[in-house]
Image (tube, rainbow, N blue to C red; front, top):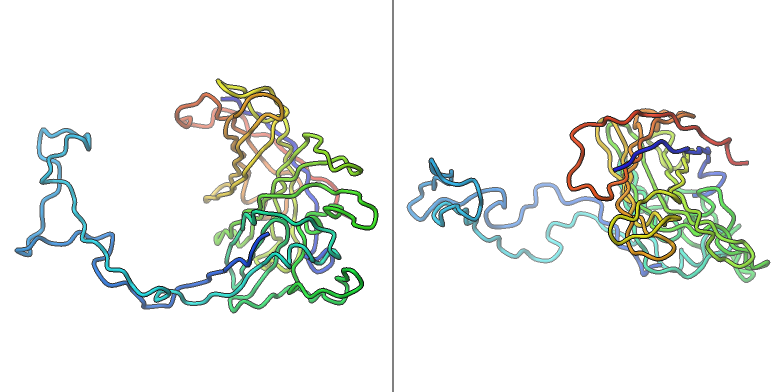
Length: 340
């Protein structure tokens, strides 16, 4: 396992000014209160026929290995009955779809992209959804709460109503995925995923961004994680964006190859202290896997929009279990100036 500190660049962007494939994505917000399926709760163990409770503890001297637990002591939960489809569904609405993706708020300067790789997070009365490569913010009734951009979203001479959706290239401060008037390509943004952290009152949306040659669209092998953090609990306002270069993060191990590497399939989680990003590193050249990468960042600093954020990178190549402690030093990372 290796660890080291990276540089995170941070920009500040507002959805209202920068504007925040999918077949239609279905968004499920909440279940109806008080609705339960019939049958025994899956966390319960039903009594025996004579209404006594079986002692399912391991007998004295018995092995702790599940393979050696006597059959009489193996739990046998009662199966649950099948309920009518939708009986526990409270609210659903149509989310982002392929039309939003292709004819987005950037004037149609998008590619047709599949699969959608949906990101969905809910908090503070908002539903944030992103797919490859657009996003939207809804209220809990399914209404977009972003500014209406129909009048300015002109494609082939006609304004296109995309239900206020905004392309991810614009959201992260990049050039269009493709400028259809010049043919120039912007960075390739993909794999969105997000969470709402109730303790910090912030939305966190991360994507993988691959740099390309603008004239050809060829990948340069440079790629980075772009972590957007809402400045408040309201995702329709300003966001702070942190960029983490992952191009050289990975180790060959037994089957991989030397970096440059692709930080594929990013995911995100959080606890009381940190926000954690993960990727699967693959070499651009020969080899097939260079290990899972973990990036631990200070949640309090991210929530505050700090210019310098503490981060530790862990390369898990060759490890069998997590380290018992964090013996490596924490460093400081800096931010970039705001986008123009």
